[in-house]
Structures are given as structure tokens and as C-alpha cells.
Image (cartoon, rainbow, N blue to C red; front, top):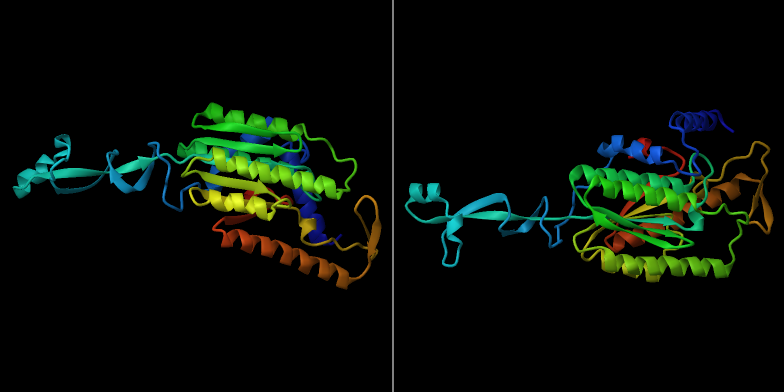
Length: 323
């Protein structure tokens, strides 16, 4: 282990100890901690708000909201209660006030806790980092007055939390994250056969289809996942979703998925649970890194081509150091 790697590892351990975080299971306090980090994340909408309910965001359309937009000449059919008497008196012509409609913008989080997320090589399991990010998004939504809801996908179940705007809604969401993560079984056998893979891919597809049905138009939707089960069928559901919602794909990754560590002996055994091979030269390490980068670059470009935003989050660093 190099000096820089040793220092980084010690810094990570200090962070875990100072916040009493195990990195494997989740306590309620560590999710409450993200109330203090809402400044790291902006939930401000980047596109036209499409939701039909009234709220705090100014829509592109003009209507009978609370935000004054302009005064124009009175036209037959205008509500006489909106006549602007000051402008009318000043110009000698009847003018009416026009207001900007306000729209509601729920925040909906899809948190993937399938078995591939139950992995971590340095600081946190990817599942734990996904829950941390989900908690941060919820607190940021609460600060802006947005409704917060979501889906939690595990191997056992698909858990849904309806969007609400109270602090109790946030606490309900945090409780669901903690309970679902801590209920995940430890993977005794790390090998995944083709049947297991297809089953998990199908669960992910069905969850994306359900997400399309429950995410209201105009919602800001976060997909928090390692995206290992993102098939073309799942991608099509997300593509249809982004037509009426703003969708952000948060790729949760582990450092070892990008670059294999250099073993001090020069030999590093690698196993899938059934077979073991030894990586013993720099060329193999470089080839692994290039293939990993190309794999996820392709996935990133595919999502962006479908008008889905991309955010990369490492499980090897605290969120506060990345956002």
C-alpha cells in the first residue's frame, strides 16, 4: 500500500469513527446528520415544472397564482377583481393584473439495494452510500418545501413511500432506508449465476416500470444505483419517464470497480467465488482500468443521450468531499 493510499484509508477510518458509522449497517443518527449538509445539493429545477398542483415554483404559463407578472389592457372576460386601478388611473385605460402560476414539484428517489450494492472495498458499502445520498436529497427537498417520496428496491421487496412535504415524511423515508438496508442479508457466496442475474435484472425493470406509474409529471426523480442491472428495457422506462419528469441518474461506484489495487508482492489473486486467477503484471492492471472506464463511459453517454442527467458518487469517500 502506498503512503497516499495509507493516508486516505486512515482519513476514512477517522471519519467513520468520528460519526460512529460502521459502513455496513445504518444508524438513524447518521441519516439525521445530513440535515447539516443540504447546502451541498441543489434541488432547484432545471427544466419547466409540469406538475398540476399549486406550489412554490413559477411556471412558464400565466394564470391565477400569487406572483405578479405584468399589467396589460383589460380584455372581455377578464376577472374584474384583477383590475389594476393604479395603472388604470395613470393611463386612462383599463388594465388588469396578470399573475404567474405556481406549480408543485415533488422529489422522488429510487434507491437500489439489490445484492450488487452490498459491496465496498474502502469506506462504505455502496448500499450505505446510496442511503446517505437518499437522506441528503430528502433533507434538501424538505428545506425547499418540496414533497419527498420514493421507492426502495431490494431482493426481497419493492417498498414505496408516497410523496409528502412534512418533516414526518422525511423521517418516514429515513426509517424505510435504515430498515431496508439493515435487513439485507450478508452475501456468503459472492458468485452470481446467470439465473440470479436475470432475476435481478427483471426486478430492476419492473421497478422502473412502477416508477413511471407513481412519479407524477413535473417530479424531480433521482435514480440511485450502481446501474449494473440497467438493461435496454429498463432504460426505455426511464426514457419515457424523463419526458414528463427531470431524471438524474446517480451512479454509486466503488474504487476497486475502476482500478485494481497494486499488490506489494506483485501478485494479486482475484476470485468470483468459484474460480481464482492471479493478476501479476502492470499490463493486466492497465487493461482492467481501461475496460472499466470504457464500460461506464458507454453507460453514461447512453443515459445522457436519453436526456437523463448523470452524477457519479464513490462509496470510497464521504459525500461531503464529493459534492
